Image (cartoon, rainbow, N blue to C red; front, side):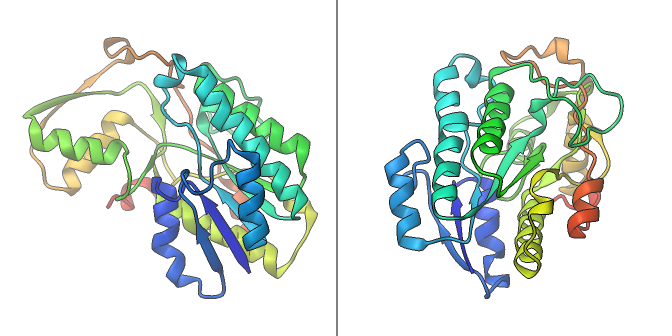
Length: 281
């Protein structure tokens, strides 16, 4: 079984490389954006012609949420055109696409966890381009799994946990917003969930399960709660202050509530989900 992974230098790409040795039955091919540029259709075709993949995991994305507000064309090029290019090539080579999406497709006005059936309503450029990328995939090729996730962190790449650890080492006090509620996602857990989907499909191929799935860790917290737990686990003494989002304005509006319901992925693929505060590295 051949699996190619785009965005190999990102935190999910690196997490997939970290767990790859546990799956000797899979021939992985990891590509950075410099090696496989999803915005270049011919480049995509050439890579697929060389590797003839059974599955493609697309972790490549424009994820600079605030910067996207001033770079909408660049965000669209990667998140929409790039996704469309990749799924066109997947269709040409009969490759199943696993595409990573985001909780930012929602406006955050819900009061209970979002299911895959809830109506998206993004409030910023990043969320809109990720939703448009989902729609492009759905329109072009039925053999896809779109996995929406949230608040991804790991020992790899850039993320909230690593930022907190760096700032905690540099400062005596920090202020973190406490009125945005979501769920952190350990990137290695997400990588394992993707493997579970691939192995389950490979064991019993069916068109019934294609579509959108949510995945994050279990439970919910605010960014303040997340930071507090990070410092606790790493035994770092810091004066941590909870502040409202209004005290920390950003170019892009964040969802106030973006907890994802994982019932579907647990039921369909038997994915086991750990509590967010038990998985901090």
